[in-house]
Length: 401
Image 1: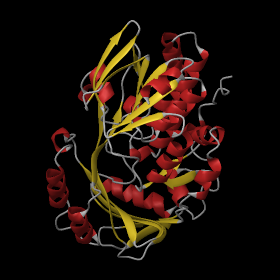
Image 2 (image 1 turned 120 degrees about the vertical axis):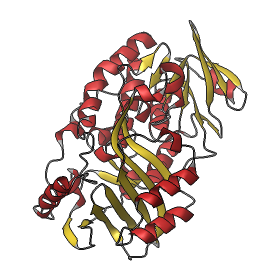
Image 3 (image 1 turned 90 degrees about the vertical axis):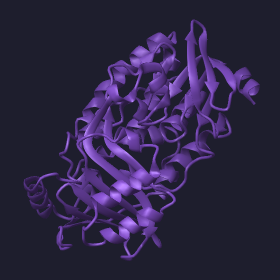
């Protein structure tokens, strides 16, 4: 298969590491511009399900230009209500989600993560080589390309490599150094999982708060299951816990021990969940997204954190911009420079939406919690128009000829 794809290349061969959102998106555009693309993904296949994510602003135009807007509109979740609860379980306020998040009702899309990745995969699966259950082990750059050794022991060479492998990017670590130097911790950790819909929720989210801790239940349409989310303040990132699921479960259980509302039920469900996703709430900030023949895109380049609600949108826009510059510039050096120059301002503007410890979702002091609740009480059920200006702050260049 590798020979077939390489032979089809008009502009060169590209390895993309990661098959979540940025990976398939950049693969789509690179193939469209005449590159032969291989996508390697450590998971055994595309990951389905997952919590709802947003596609807004400039990213909607990327989706439209890919011809995927009707499919994603059909998959739109349409959360209708967010209810915030106080520590004792009493209602603080109920509001339309867009009035809290700053989106545009009837325009922005909210879809399950797995629905978005599957739509992206379907758009490119017949044109791009996908290698599942494998990952990049080493990269060696030279004047004419990049030699890659995979975890499986396979050796291959490519003209360029794109790291689209997320917040804890292996590509970034190999080429730019340890994650800690680029990791900007925002002061929280979280655990996400699915559980039984014990409250009978439908098209809505319920968020319980106490100082420095949040428990949330999100119902995607009508289902027997909901997405559970336990968020807590943590001044230092927990690098050692990333690869220890037992330690993650113990930490979350200890942090929420003694809390009320549905928290004990959620902790018990978290203990038994087979889809637990634990991570820190952080951003990646680094002065360069490219080095030699390697470029980063999406969370690998500049994760904004889920607190901004912009991770998926930045991944889609970054993929479009990176592929477009490679298609329109004389060589990869000029293309990478243009990619950084034309995209960085948009990314940093969206990253700036949150600071350390100031999340609306999880206030860390009594004063911050009181201010947040007062603001929520002042919201109406009608979403604001238009959305946040940073969501649409980049005008896309035309699709390359």
